[in-house]
Amino acid sequence: MARRTKAEAEQTREQILDAAETVFLRRGVARASLEEIAKAAGVTRGAVYWHFRNKADLFDAMHCRVHLPMQDLFDQVMALEDGCAISALREFCVQSLLSLAANPRRQRVYTILFHHCEFVDGLQDSNRRLIAIQHRWMTSMKTLFERERERGTLVDVCPRLAAMTIHTAMLGIYFDYLRKPDAYDLDAEAEALVNVIFRCVS
Image 1 (tube, one colour):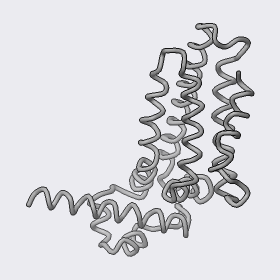
Image 2 (cartoon, rainbow, N blue to C red; image 1 turned 120 degrees about the vertical axis):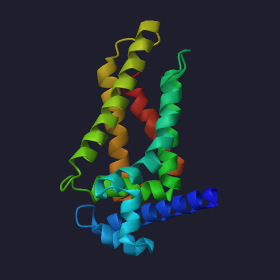
Image 3 (cartoon, helix red, strand yellow; image 1 turned 120 degrees about the horizontal axis):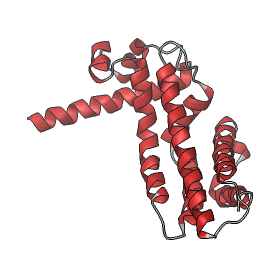
C-alpha cells in the first residue's frame, strides 16, 4: 500500500508539473497563479503546496525535468580525458538541438524560460540558479579547451572565448528556434549549424 501511495503522489506531482507548463506557457510565469495551476491539474491548491513550497519551487522543478538529463550527458562529456572531448562536446550540441526539435516538453519549458518569464515576485532565486547553471557550463567548457590546448590539439584558441562562443551561439539558436520554429529544420540542419560554431573556435 505504501508503494502505491508513493506512486500516486508522484503521479500527482507530475500532473501538477504538466499543468504548470500549460499555464505558464499561456499566461506567463509572473501572471500565473498556483490556483490556476491546481485547477488545470485537477487537484486542490493544498495538493500543490504539498509538493511545492511556492511558485518558484514549482518553476524550478519544471525546469529540472528537462535540464537534468542533459546535465548528466554534459557532465559525462566534460569528464572525458582521452583527447576526444571536443568531438564529444560537438556531438552533445547536435543532440541537444535534435532533442529540442523532437521533444514537445523541452520546447514548452524553454519557450517559457526564454519568452514567457519575468524574474520578479519571488523568482529572483530561480534566476540566480539559472545563471549559476550557465556559469558552470561555461567554466566546464573553458576547462575542456584549456586541457586540449595543453595537449597541443588546439593552437591559438582562447579557451574563455571558445566557451563563450559555443554557449552564446547555442542559446541564440534555442531562442530563435522557439520564437519561429518554421524557419528551421533542425532535424536536417542541427549538425551543420553546430559545425559552423565549432569551426569558429578550432
